[in-house]
Picture 1 (cartoon, rainbow, N blue to C red):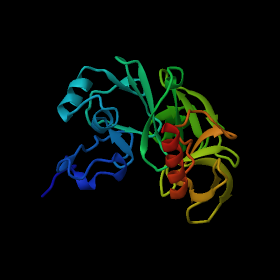
Picture 2: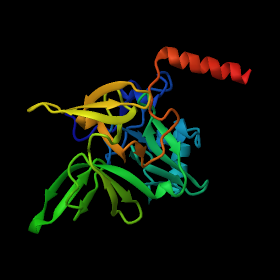
Picture 3: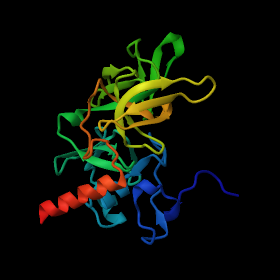
Picture 4: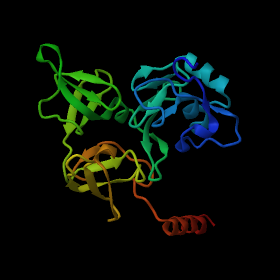
Length: 263
């Protein structure tokens, strides 16, 4: 009889957005238990070897992390399978580089290079606000943080801006119509737009209608929506494409234009 957690992950069962080749081996790195779900994260191995290309092999990744060179959200991480997820800030001291993990318009993790100033904070979605012992209010965030004595105006689904050094809340954004959001789940993952309308269904999922910068409208569940700014201005810089999904024809035209410009 099997006891405890599975320690292995087959290559074919790994999430699609890791983009591991099918014939590159039988196994994939299984993310350690951590602040992000196993299928909504990128393990350190995939980050350093497959994305940043700082290592050629699994063993080289171990050598890099054990030198305490890699920080996630301001804390040194030596676990080769540490699960880094959406909005996490990856810092490499040796090269003075900072990256924020965001989704591109196709729903794949993109390591977006950011400046030192932007690497000092991250945005967190509030999961719930509750009262603890002796009536102390606290909130839980999507990345497993518990913060005591938040602003009384902060409610579930709002977004808070956290100073990574102190762990304190700097500012917050209400989950309201007219604010810019990024979709973090479902078919529209990675798309960025402004909330146009909230459709409430009692006893079922609340549906959010969003319009992107190109004027295209789409709808998704409330659980998939992450507010990233007030009004139309995001509080974090966005990767290439700015979260606007192109059709296959538009993509082909763009590639053709880039090809003719290079020629």
